[in-house]
Image (cartoon, rainbow, N blue to C red; front, side, top):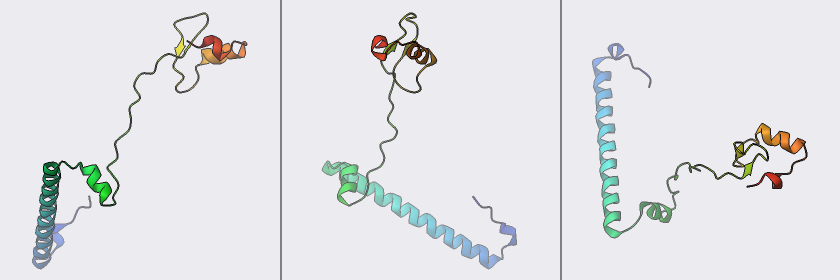
Amino acid sequence: MKKVNLSALSSAELNALKADIDKELADRSSKLKAIEEVKKLAADKGIKLDDLIAELGGKAAPKGKRELGPAPIRFRHPHDASLTWSGRGKRPNWMKDALAKGITEAQMAV
């Protein structure tokens, strides 16, 4: 946020700035009050806000990033059972080495 040097302003400029600030705060307050009224009315009528927004032609709020969670093991090293891979992300070095030696993915599949 840009800092304003208030001491450099005249009394008239300070009063004008104060009036602008008071007006902006009142506008924001009335908008928040109207939004709360719409939310309450929609809830009373059993309407989801996403449906209301879509009906008005707007886009629904983003749902957020989906979490994948732990993936099941899809591949296991043929000689060392402690080496596993879910198939997500970069292929591990042990799997690259096994493929280079002629072992197929099907042979390592769990």
